[in-house]
Image (cartoon, rainbow, N blue to C red; front, side):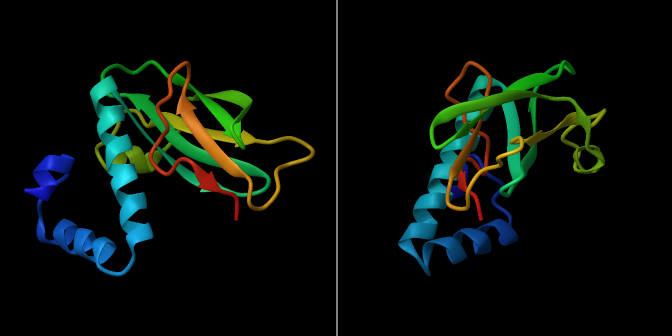
Length: 142
């Protein structure tokens, strides 16, 4: 029932992952439920994507519309301030391999510039002109 509510597959591996998140830590559970809600919002609005890497020099991930092949723009926020925009049009073979994209042209890589960002800064990546954070966003710079 929980998997149906969260719109996620209900296979044994997923159920074990859910149980592992709920049992050890309320904080992990809250983060997980927020990620599930983000995934549902993205899907409802016709998007999907993930923030894969955040460090003090660059960030990377992928974003796309669920229907169509046109690349989309994402906005990068650092500590809730708009830092820049980039287009999600880089080739990602892993998206093809996972069946997420037929062409794989949905990746993005964004460099912060000469000053970078500091460890502990909070980075968010959103679909341009929306309040839709990608999965994995926001995230602290490690």
